[in-house]
Length: 157
Ligand code: ZN
Image (cartoon, rainbow, N blue to C red; front, side):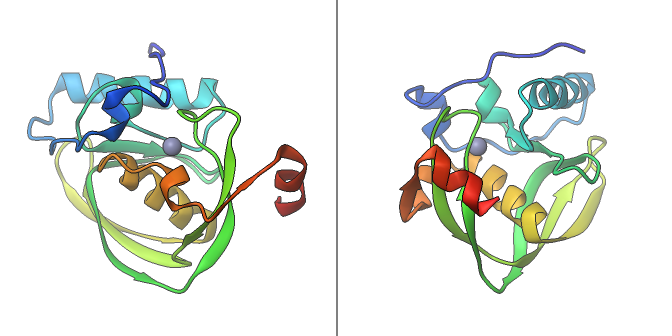
């Protein structure tokens, strides 16, 4: 495994629309492995391919309940509302309050191209939305209705 450099805000790649993954080959598997390694090393809970400079629709997520790999994810149902503090490995040192659905269902493919669906609630739903947004060039700071200072963030945890 290898870690990759995380692209930070200001880089155009974070603002582009990522293309669907079409080849479920060794290269994709290496990318997903490297993304997971990069996410764990940076102590993040999710990472999207554009964050390592690859404009393809793939994300990895681990909110502490095991790793999810979502290739070509599409949120097909969502309900409820939750409001909480969010940050991003590509936007270091900034945190903001964002509304997200409480619960959702996402349709995706695994690393071999097999379709599956995942139901997510709570923090996992936040991570799925946040990472899927990255694939469309959207950052949490676009959706935050208020930015937080670090002391406030501690209060929301
Ligand atoms: Zn992010």
